[in-house]
Image (cartoon, rainbow, N blue to C red; front, side):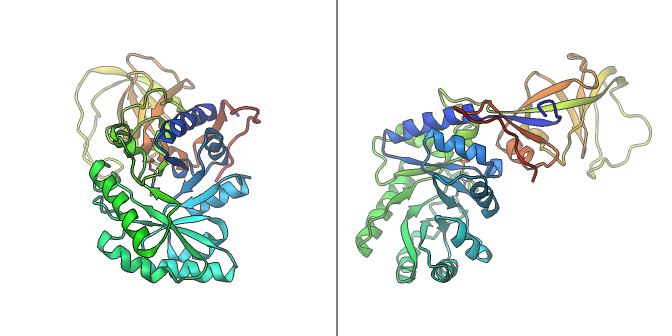
Length: 368
Ligand SMILES: *Cc1c(COP(=O)(O)O)cnc(C)c1O
């Protein structure tokens, strides 16, 4: 199984190390963590590594992934759903402890099913602070809360915000202060005592280091910095963290000397572009058995300086002059977040869990 190609090797102990270091760091200023598993499709062993590393919550954007983790035996945590499609309200009530919300009608639906299943459901209300993805405008927040406060079986446990995802707006002392102040004002107006103020994601690292006082913010939701060891404002590695917990290992299927200019009459390529090429004479070229159906080529980074010449649905063509790979050889890549997301989602790429934490059985990820 270990030699199946292509595959991603996933180091569970590196993910656990990263989580432990981040939990300690953020814990210094009273911030708890949600480990975000959406990029790894809710792989239960990865959730477990995060829990062992110290996260109090596991968060995912997809109910399917949360169900997968529950079925996979992850019970020792609270599950958080990062977005809330109304059509999934019943499944959310059954499987999720806390959901992030921005629509009154959706919360009403959650209340309906919570009552029907005799469950209590917790919600965090997301506030719009400038990034223009999800969020209730601060001016609409009091009316929103007034409307949902009487709903039975729904408990508002706090406010949250999400930045640096759509509008590229940086978490800074100004917007974080705003979230703190809103929390204080709302708690006072409605005589509530919020459990969580969830200030953001992996982009909050610089703000955290620079702030003297995190205010009311006592939670962050971290995916990329746990998995890839980087903050996401400028994608710098976080000191002490592993950046290589995931390795993509691929297989060469052809190596030949060929001219560097295509010959024959020019037409569109497989994706409707008219390609153009530089004549570098006859060179060694190679092909890897992986393509656009599996990955985005900008999201995979060769371990060496291999130059990628092009990519079609199932083939990556590279310049082989320097490394002289032969058919059957392995080529290794690091992944960025987009590369990780795509590779984890490809059913053609096997996922091998290596370096189990503590006394775990070595096991392989199931197909999905
Ligand atoms: C994906 C997501 C996160 C995690 O983001 P990272 O940049 O991976 O840390 C946090 N919050 C929400 C709402 C998300 O959708």
